[in-house]
Image 1 (spheres, chains in turn blue, yellow):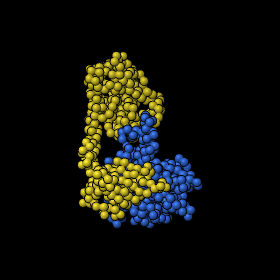
Image 2: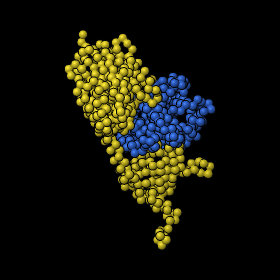
Image 3: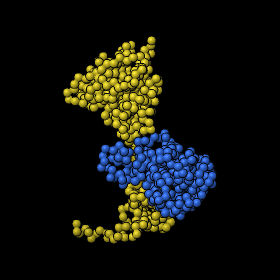
Length: 246
Length: 380
């Protein structure tokens, strides 16, 4: 069972969910390149210019560990990244779980994603103003080319710290993505977990995803906001468990 | 002092809370506001009847701020129990924007379960505009340094029927400042050329201007007909006299276009690689001495000669091409020879570009990378 994090944080997003599956699954947590404790120097703006580059990260992990029959759990943008990975190599996966998916964030004609292009630009500006621990003192330690080991202790307390350049790049790619056409190509049974009052992935978007997937189940969570894996881990884990048992 | 105390307003807890020098709100875990103070009412222009039970904290944010709240703020608060100094824009009741700095802590009940969020809000209007100025200044400095670097490196590379010369130059793309790598290739009289690659210590505008001075100095000294070793000695004196470019490394090479005689002097720089026809590529370790102005009493500078065979490929480069923190230098050097070998028959410009791509693989470069490739192929 492979858990992939969304935009904004790292594998810490799953820390209250994955233990529920550790007894009967091999649990794998990953950070995309440029996030968490990955090697940030390996970030290549060209490779990650579309969500396919991130899907390739997932497939590299799958190959390296030679995973088969894998359950892929993706949160937020990783729900779509997961869909791309599964569509590319369906033989590796048994199920896909999409937590708060959106195939397109920006409104387009009749399609309501919830955002305008101006909203996304504003987000990019707000990322510039929030470095979250990313100063010239800490950046080398986070990026791994650190000659001051005393920073290591501080680092363990530093969650979700991302190079602001990489964060902006990922934000742009995420919020300008349009993967609606990829939904019908997902060839495995999929669970769509929809939160209540989620401005990132509103209920109409979850219903759209459910409607366009060939074989899916839509579960509406009581949990509010965009991160049920943190705010309601029990409910999230139970919904995934019920889906795996069905 | 004591006499004045009587005139102070009474700091009751209520008074402290309501008129604290920061906005204050308590929310449920989903953001629904349950309590606010008077300062927050004043900051936002909403009165508490419009806030308490009516709005969530995130409803007070701009749309971009709401995305940030959902993707960064809320997760971080859940994971570590607090967030500090988050910059967000609040939208006031009249639609105007209040740049704010926000701190939040998660409050737990007796059983340790999270129950509420306490948040303080500071007006950060002036701070934010100053930050924007700093960011603009930083971007401007970077752009000026990059332009300076490009300008200083501009110039024609020599053309000759016996020469195939290609250059690849990649300025650092990470970090805030440009580096100080340079290259040069120019004619020495009728039938010889000079090749130079160098690396100035430091970054930014200072490194770029130093590089420009040294590059010009090398050109001027080369015009006087100095041998490569003697040229580096003169450059040492220049660097010492003008207190610039200390610890710069560079390779200066002169190639006779008719005979293929190559003379190299290297001031602490990585050795050029030579792929002679039929032989495995190798490094030319001869003619080496210390970096520029490295000692108070410099030894005479060494130089070394080798005669190229027709169709030989010579590659000069800077350390950005091979240095990686995740592997020893020697591994980078060995890898470089293998990559040169795989492309030795390509045109020089293609070799320089391919080699750079292959060596950097998927890495972003935090250092400048400079590669000069030259094939000497005199007309038969």
